[in-house]
Image (cartoon, rainbow, N blue to C red; front, top):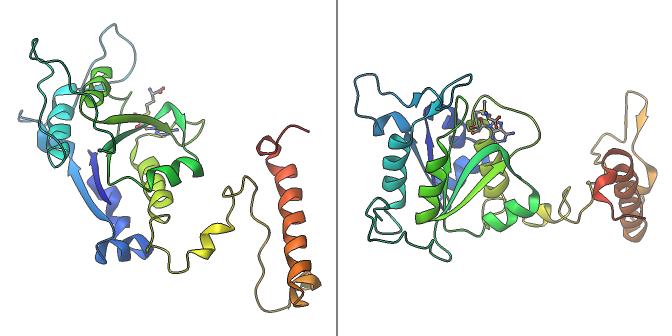
Length: 247
Ligand code: SAM
């Protein structure tokens, strides 16, 4: 999978060099390219923001650097479409082509199901907003060249899209075949079957007066599976009842 990230803080993504995703990059499973949005500016101050039309607090990211950055990262997939040429209708996004994801608290909420769906893409582009966000026309332009999704990490506001993109890449990347050594470990995880995962234990059998549930040490696989399923249901009911179907 090819991943392009556009950001004004490329250093946030140094963490993609370590652990399983770092190994996936070394192995050529993930091809990650981080681009500094300021490289697509042409003024002395490398300006990427300006005051909002209509007034209001904060600054808005300017469309011009974003347009050039998107042209550059989408170049690998499709010819550049000049949406400003009146006679040329905007191109339709190519089926199975690149998907451009803009993290946004105003987007659809990121889920394990979305991570799984996106793990099948060949090319993902992430555009990290800052300040009050990105000029709306950037989303429209991107939509003329690729599939576009505004995706929220949850109902809270971050300072920028970088942390959200890191979280999404980690959730998506670990689902790509070959990234996790034992694919079976993905199957029983929280959210894969609509329930939270059961509690896990390892040695020693007793630690600081706390014992491992005896059923897990008895070797009866049917009883272990039943215990784990009951623990999943109990935990989900207690912590995330919204995940359960209505009674
Ligand atoms: N003014 C925006 C609003 O109220 O919707 C918030 C802008 S926020 C300070 C700056 C950037 O952080 C956003 O453009 C987005 O890239 C990112 N961001 C903030 N919260 C996020 C969330 N919950 N999920 C994904 N991205 C988020």
